[in-house]
Amino acid sequence: MTERRDNPYLWVTWITGLMAGEAQCQWAAWFRAHFKGFDKRPSTLDMVAWKAQHGEMLRAKAAALRNDGYTVFIEEQNKFTFRGQAATLQGKPDVVAVKDDDALVVDCKTGQRRDSDILQMLVYMLVLPHTHSACSNRQLRGEIEYRDGALAVPTDRLTAEIRSLIRTTIERAAGKQPTPRVPSAMECRFCDIMKQDCPERIDEEPPIRQTTHDLF
Image (cartoon, rainbow, N blue to C red; front, top):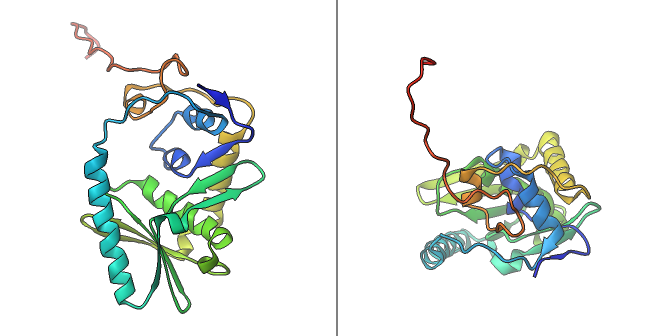
């Protein structure tokens, strides 16, 4: 049953698509931040296949880092709950690895490369020094592991502009007033909020209009 949260709560991946411009419906993040227990639309993702692929990538990366002399922390060891002034933010980076003065956070992605992957990594790089004992007082570098290779996210990518973007996106999603709904067939397709909570949800592709016209 849908019920209101006592305080705004956000998972990192709820906001990264908005920051990257890959998602436009701010309301979906606002709703999740303020409500829990709602019925969810079943995912179309093959979770068994995804977990197998992701798990294999993670194990291979962790083994390579250990062979290079890093102390490695995996998934649940990295899970954080950071309570800020606007909202509580939660996330779970795949791998954190430290060696001497080097601190690295890695996330494994089985799908296509997206700008939101980079922003997700930058949120981790911002928060982990405040939540993970191994990252305390360190500047982290990031790495996104794809099936076709790795993408480095150097420390200097976490600029003042990115910090401001993260802050304002969280504050907007955590605000008291609902943010705008922007329903579209593409975004609604990947959204698990059902019509009973979002009457404007679009579940079917709009029809293609075919007509004869002198417009073109």
